[in-house]
Length: 234
Ligand code: 2AL
Image (cartoon, rainbow, N blue to C red; front, side, top):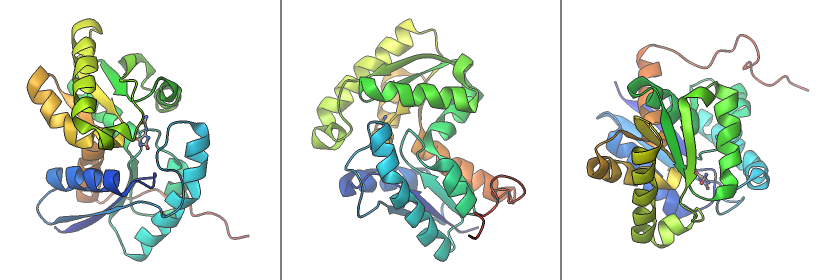
């Protein structure tokens, strides 16, 4: 079964889009084609509520483009899952946010998880999502590596070392069985950290690819019965 999955990086960083696309392709089934895209206009990185708002129209424009290409699923590859519900109204193929994908996967392999994200100020976004999706009781801690999103591509070796330190602290101190990586730009670091620490490390980009493939295998699409129906014509 060949699938086409559109992976949308909501920030405008081409380098990060490439990393995200590669991580997605690496985990995809043979025959699944990954189309990794980012908006031409918007913000270079998403680190707060303002950045999320600015990114929204770019994400929705890309969802529309994906529809015209007949993709089988869309992934919103930013840890705040910006514009997820609006994207689901517009699309009919499944739309998966990387935070929700990671939370779901983490609770299938562990009762509790910690999140390791980028900047302190982004922690509030993860907190809101845990509440919204009903995962609050499963999350022990939200830790951050105190680096901005773009540092992940500017100095990936240093960022990896910081990530390793935070994940080690989470493993040793938080009483968790799994760790969720809290940024799309960390996607290709998950396997390395996991091998080093011997604990499941869940990156939402790869989790989302497997969820889209799973939904497709079950013939499930976004429900058009109820609030995810197409936006009303005005
Ligand atoms: C993110 C992310 O995943 N991509 C981005 O630009 N900002 N979120 C985050 N907490 O670092």
